[in-house]
Length: 224
Image (tube, rainbow, N blue to C red):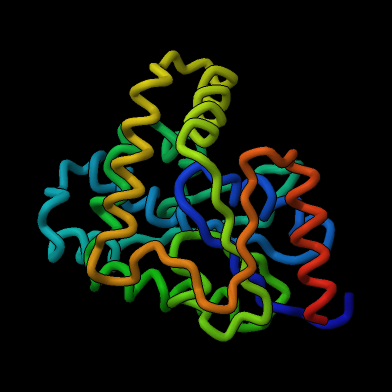
């Protein structure tokens, strides 16, 4: 594909964004940008340094002094570096998951993150996923996808992911956590989780990963 597009993939927690975005990027030879990992890296850094998560100013200072790097996807995995340290595994801990929406609610932090993300996307040929990519970060993206799935399906996916990673957790607790994250993400004042008007909505509840990938590729081809 000669035309290097900006592709925005949004949706709630555990809707399958990262999984399909990485594979679509691989097939198109595009760069994959996991914006959620950037917020997770900041949340991890704040927890590790005992920074007050309710103090937006202190969190902004921490972000300004932090370098968050997303390396190209290799063998289906994107490495996340925080000040040169590989934190790819650490940022997926349950503690970070439970606190990332709190960190992501501050306007100053979202502005800095959005600026960094726009710089990454400037040249096109990127697949970027998150909560506000099509609506705020890349409002002029040529392709916008909005993935949804039922709470039960999303909790089951997260449950299986954690079991595979050796983590024991409660399925019912995951459902409660996802509902809470949906509430925080959709009700925050700045750049809430919202479907862009020109986004194509795909309900992944009963679809396989391959089905979703094929549908997204179809949408991209239609836009070229």
